[in-house]
Image (cartoon, rainbow, N blue to C red):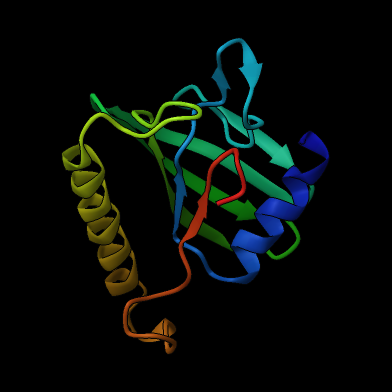
Length: 141
């Protein structure tokens, strides 16, 4: 998986994505489910090819974790803010106990996407709901 991290960040960058949604834990049942493609601890950084990713803060909730990332393209010097939103109440090979947490999470994703799109102002000329949201889990959905 680490071999794909540079490509992942290039995809996020090239598509102007502001929100990444992850519906898995990195490790479940002692198995790696997803590589750690972002810096986990606050005020730490990782380099993925030409992208320098800095963890600007973590906001933990019962069912999800929101991480504020600052991504710098070291070749151009351009910096962007990206929100990583991880839903942690979806069990491996199962479904959440209640739809309420997932629906609340969806609303939170929409809130962050709307805020990010508005902050882009006239720089965003695409779809009115904003750039694509990257959504992934461990099972390919």
